[in-house]
Length: 181
Image (tube, rainbow, N blue to C red; front, side, top):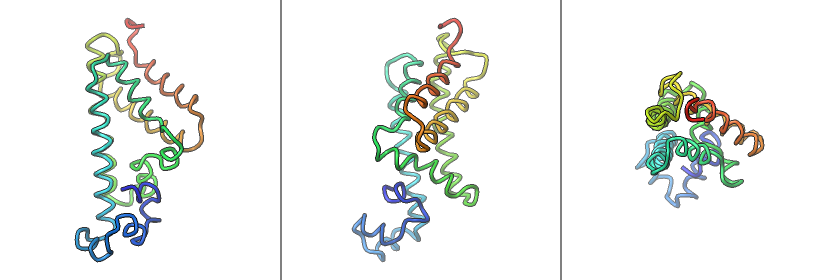
């Protein structure tokens, strides 16, 4: 996963994979039918880890607004290495476009899982009168997920942390109920 995340699928060679894993090429072929099969497993692992991390944030004993702020904070890359690599799912989506159904399925599965978690947080906030009910929880979850993806692209493209944090603060602020302000 780390090699694909750093280099992308097309730029990753079997030599890169064998050097990093310290597994011989033949042994990799025995477990994975080809580089693409290994890549799909790496995407699934990345998705699982990302979703687990997001679920941990969502399970905190704080208000739904604090949870959304924590999700936004966690979206921003914490160091230069993470910034350089970016998000494996977004990188893969940009690298493959719509040319690979299975890669797109993994990307869409991650977006759907993220949206489900965000929707639950948002619905809890709507029930508590903290988040606007002008749009459904689902609509707001899709909107926030899009803003989070956009923030990742902004960051990788060189936008300042302040600009990105401002976009994410504004995104959450637009969802706050008028009664909660």
